[in-house]
Image (cartoon, rainbow, N blue to C red; front, side, top):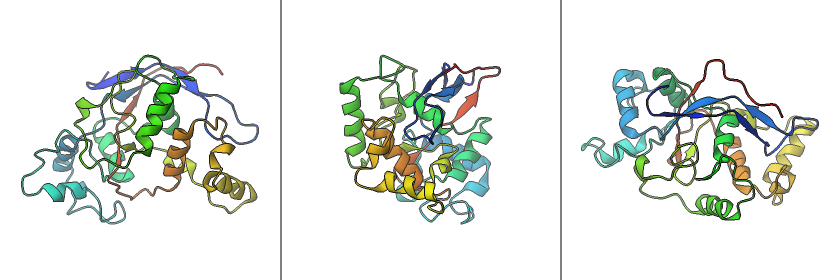
Length: 245
């Protein structure tokens, strides 16, 4: 196991939306996940090694003009004061490149959502109203001006820190949530997702936090650099097997 990662045991979750006849349960193989979000300091070491991902060098096709904007705000002091905060304003392309540089990958949606089910005490939060209310409060609070150091964020059952309430997090297959509206099925999904009663079309309408994540991913672009978006990396466990639905 790579340093700084925790093992997530095999399990599964009920997806927020599923196609008619689709599986009601998504099995997830065991995998490894970074204990903390990637920090500014860690990303700076990557940029120093891979100069094409530096703000002054990155090609517009891989990131928009907000790429690593917080680094410009603290110059010329370097990263003093933000080194241990989650790195944000990083595009999907850059996040994938970082994880590859570390010999890892971005987690997929199923892995991220599975880990997001855990509270501090249990791998599956179930119907715990206190935890659900806390997650909703985090998601409904305006983005914080100063991010905490990653070590100062809350820890869930698996030992993963800061999964909720700090920054949104990139996943590898974020674009699987995209809808085009080019077909009747897409149009119906789009209406369900963005109308006032959008959450009512979900498998679990009470899981509004998952609905918010789904909608956010649907609006995201691969070159987008957002001040409230960070990421962490994952790795496979050789020979890991999932569980049966």
